[in-house]
View 1 (cartoon, rainbow, N blue to C red):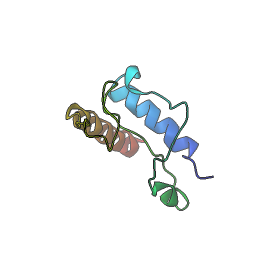
View 2: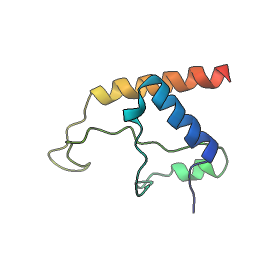
View 3: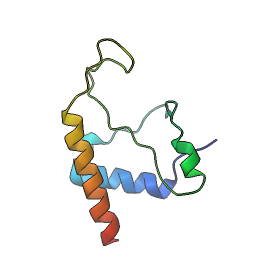
View 4: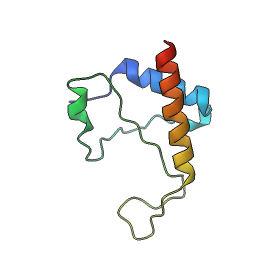
Length: 90
């Protein structure tokens, strides 16, 4: 079974809470790779697969009612920028 590396997952949680706030981190009850091949990267490098989310009222992917929440881009950019700054500072 391929899973996130603990150190990367903890780093991601702390980064999210620092830059976006605690309410933006929600551990999944049933983690899923959702058909991604990212797990193969984790065989060679430490990392974590995260889901940015699209909002609680969003239709699921591959549904004719799905509409990407553009506000999610803002959160993704903040997370990635914050993670970069925190990583470089460590």
